[in-house]
Image 1 (tube, rainbow, N blue to C red):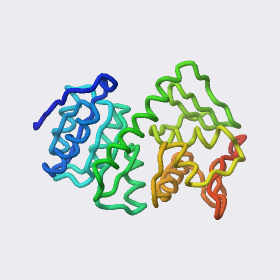
Image 2 (image 1 turned 180 degrees about the horizontal axis):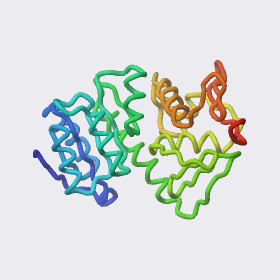
Image 3 (image 1 turned 120 degrees about the vertical axis):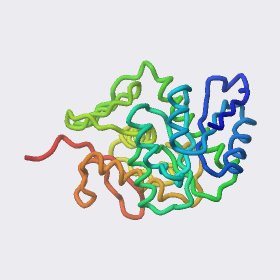
Length: 246
């Protein structure tokens, strides 16, 4: 396994990132830029080496290429998500909504389409870690109950009608923003700023993909939604539900 560990700056000494990509030049470039930000970095050239690295190393974030040889990034993400709650930033040359939904369904928290600049990747990494850190620091927060939906910011547990719903870090954060003000209409741009923490120029479809995945997990019919309503030409809003009708 090609494993390289870089010294971390004091403010990020506990942050360890696993970079998985079969393109050695790109993998080393990504690792080098992350090194300049003070992160510890481990590299893996394929999915098998990535999973092996996770058994031996405590990792805070995985930067994962979708098109890996033999063992796809989607399958790697599924296996990681089945065992550990580690945020995943997926890298891909394919940017369709279907591809994004497949990645999110496998447990991916963010999606970056190639080609990208290393600075943009670093910004995405920071945003994912910022969201995770905000949740971990909210130790005293109690459950937010809206209608028949309950969200616990500390444990990231979600109950809908008493049934547990498993969400990724990003899905939980998006749902929390929407439920904090039931009935408020949020534009895609406002959701991007609130959830991701910085501007995703031209990528409002990212919000659409996450909303679609949330609806799928809640069993929400887009034509007659119980929770997540589309406001044509404006954005999305959360409407409390009192439970399924008989």
